[in-house]
Length: 192
Ligand code: AMP
Image (cartoon, rainbow, N blue to C red):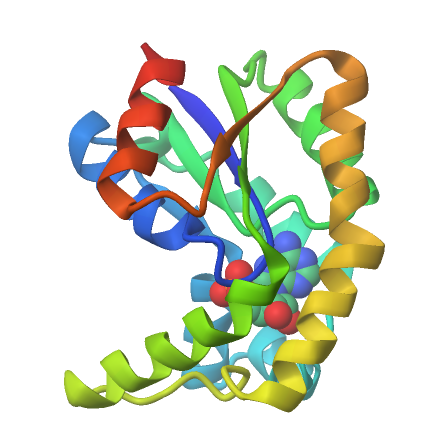
């Protein structure tokens, strides 16, 4: 199964992707996680991406498309994958279409988690608190200033991605404001 999860920062994409990974034994491909790993490892991509990510902006299409193009060719992606945080611009969605066509692959579902924007900042703040409680390190962009920029980037550059898939008739949506288990059930229903 090849799936894209769309939705603003804090919508619950990562939480649901982790659950689906376990259920379907397919990897979660989070470009955010991959970029954070690159920053931590100090790779050339990480060095380029760090400042933009910390501020809440979007890393260049070229970088993230390159990362995904390489990643989905790896053996563990053969049975499928869940894209979490990609595509985030229409250019990325178009590039993904080309990559998949070249690999003779098709997407099975594109699902948007619909959430009330006013709840998102509280969710991000909660995520930061939970991370601290678990002894982890809070993401450099999980703060109100960066969050505002991330939400703006979502509105301006990522919301059109939903419209892109909607115009192709392939977009489904679930209520991301529902409790986590309910969202999972709604996703299961769509995925069959
Ligand atoms: P996320 O973990 O999905 O919230 O992503 C964290 C940050 O990584 C974003 O705010 C962007 O700076 C960067 N990022 C992740 N995925 C993408 C993408 N598909 N395109 C551009 N930037 C991305």
